[in-house]
Length: 422
Image (cartoon, rainbow, N blue to C red; front, top):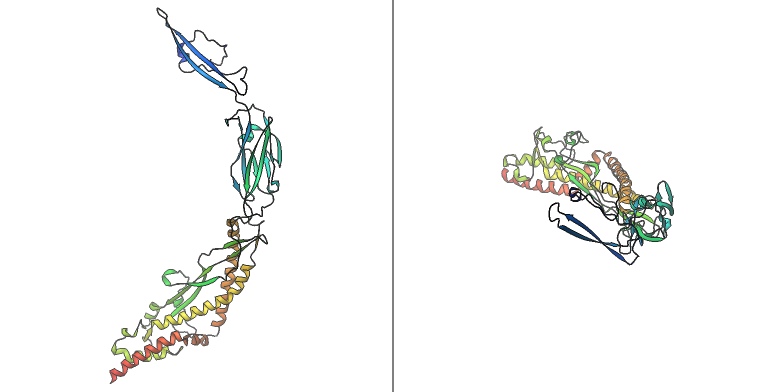
C-alpha cells in the first residue's frame, strides 16, 4: 500500500484507503508445481467504532495456477509475399494452454530459417543471416525481426514455404511464410494471335486540333468537301501477360488496338462560298434539277471545276473520305507486321518482373513505344501515297463506293430534268 510492502496482515487501515483500491495483492514466493494450483483466501474485517463493536467480515478467493513457458508461437505480418518484399516476424511466449507468458527482461532467443533458405534471409538490428542469435525476446515479440524475400526467385507456379524456427529457454516454436514464385497466377503461353487493329472514327465535335483541317486547301487548291486525318493516337490498350515456364520468361500479347482518326464533311466551310450540300436528290428543287445534274456530272470527274454555289452530294463526299479511311487501314495492316514481330520479341526475365502487375507495367511502356513506331510507319506509307497528288485522289474517287452513289444520283436527276423539259 502506498508503495510499501507489508506482510500477510494489515491492521488499522483507514476505510478511505481501502475503498478506492489502494491495496494491491502481489502473488510471489513458492510456485505451485506444473500440474497443481493454489487457492488463496483474502479477507477483511471491519470493526464498528461504536458499541457493541460487532465485526463485519468479507472474504474473496483467488486461484493461483502454475504458468510457465511451454512453446513459442510464431506468426508473420504477411502470410504470402512476392520477391523483394519484406515481412515482420512476431514471436509470442505461450504456456501449455496457449496463454501468454511474461518472460523476464534480458531473455534471449534465436531465430533461424530451417528450409528454403535460398529465397531470402533474416534481418535484425543491422544483422543479416539465415540464423540470428541473442535477440532480446521483447524485440522479437514486437516484430523487430524481419524476413526479406531477396534471394532466389521460386520458379514453381505455386508459392513456396520458408520455415521459421525459434528457440530459447530450452523451448522452441515454428512458423512459415510463403514466397510467391515468378509468374504465379499467370496463364501459360499459347499461340499468340495477331493484334486486331480497328479505327475509332471521330468527328469535329470529338476532337480539338490546332488548325481546322477543313480550312486547308485540297491538292488542286480547291475547297475541301471532306477530311480524313489520322490523329496518331490509340485508345487505351491492355498488355496481356503470360508466363513461359519452359524458358522462365514473360511474353505478351495485345488483343486489339483502336486508332483514333478524324473523318468529317466540311459543311460549314462549303456554305461560305455558297455551295449547297444535300443528303439526297429529293432535297434538290425542280427549278434547280437540270443545273444540279451538271453539278453531279462534274463531281464524277475529280478535279473538274464546279460552279460556285453548285450542289454537292454529301453521301458521295463521305464515301470518298471513307475510301481514304480504308486506305489508311491498309497502311496500318502493312505496318502491323513489324509491330507483331516486336511484340513477339518482347520478353521479360524474372529478375525484371516477378508478378503480373510488375510485368504488365513494364510491358505497357515498351508496347507504347512500338505503337508509336507502328503509327509512324503507317503515316509514312500514307505520305508516300499522297505525294502522287491528283493521281492518288482520282484513284480514290473512282472507287465503286463513290461512283455508285454519283451514278445513281446522276441518273435520277437526269431523268427528272428530261421530264421537266418535255
